Image (cartoon, rainbow, N blue to C red):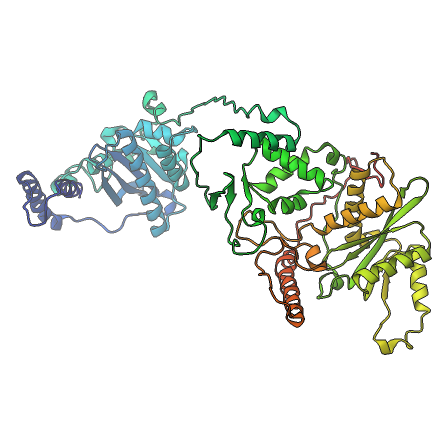
Length: 629
């Protein structure tokens, strides 16, 4: 079939129409091939291909290629009663592609064709236990198959295909004169097939294996090395210089003033507006690039509707992040990202903020990680539907030194569901002093139904005092007793959900105060700032998409919507009190719905446990209760 395939390939190459006759030379070749098909009825051969026991059988695959085609042929060798039988099993040929391909590559393609045809024959005839031998006269292709080198893409893919179907030890070299696949690769007529002994296979297969051709050859190393994968070593030294004038100032405010002077001088030089992928960037009236959001119809600050666009990994951006980091009491990545998002749009904001915070010298002293325990199931009071501070956890921290003399402690009230906090100062650890703080908390935040605490004496004393009240006499006013729950005495980790907030409060106080001491009024002011900072931390994921809603924070559940609050809520312009009340109830309902979808849904999957099992000899980090400042 090779001559017919070549005629068809050349006919397609002429690009002649169907109605036009073929060139005379192609017509003559086709006529010769067509008349030669009459001899096909004279071909006769046995259907039986194997004799004797299968232990004496062996499968032989021959591969060869020429400039016009490549082919493979398979014979089965068997022995019975001292006689050797070699029978034709299958053959396949393909013509060379129109694109010029080297002979060694065509030889490799013939080996791929032989491997695939052998796989098909072995599966179809159930010959998996029969030994298999692969023969080729291509020394270059044989070296590609047998050597462990890093070949180029073409050779590497074909060698990988061959090795997946056969083992490299099965491949052998055979002289070209003894290779029967040479007939199929060059093409011949049906009359010549019988003359070449096509159906009986090569003569050496009828001899003993010791008389078979030895795999001894001298390959062309230049052709072999030509297909090795090229290794290019590029050593580029690129120096990126920052504008020197930025580095002359350490304060962000000075940089802003100097930059304003530069803008005033820049009257005749205007940069082209560049389109930023995924963002709508506009140039404002003040020649500042801003990001156009989808909430521009809202009545709000310009910086919130059109945040200023800032580049990533820039000295100016780093100074701005450091300024906000100091302004908000060395806050973490989430709080800084939420605060910066109100006025600025920074590319890869969290990555830049995390990089700046990690380089803060003050914060580095308090970020050492200790061994953590695997997360467990959250109790019902932590995830059920409730009002703000309906389920409250209480704990104390301190003392702090006051001026001129005295000490103060801090009572932390935290909501178990919405994670908001309320801070109250104490001048004593007595039960009476704590009860006064509890009264102030109830007057400002509402009365909780359930309270969780540890077993401190002031907590026990308050619980005993509340139990002495005759609640039956005041039940008519629908004032039910507070359900007080204490942690087990030896299970301090039960209060981990408020201990983590105690740590946040302490870390902010230590970074603000250091070793200094304040009076009671100053402490009260600082506690209010710390409380506002922690209550503004995001509870949900902060996205880099400008169309996403701002993250939920505990402060959204404590007070009415601020001017720069949730961007998907429209302002209400009405004087009717009942309409305003209904609107506020709708806002609270939507906030709780978002809290359920965005915050609680993140707790459905259990996070990966980061703890590891300790063994004798492991080096561990011991976390101290008080860290030196």
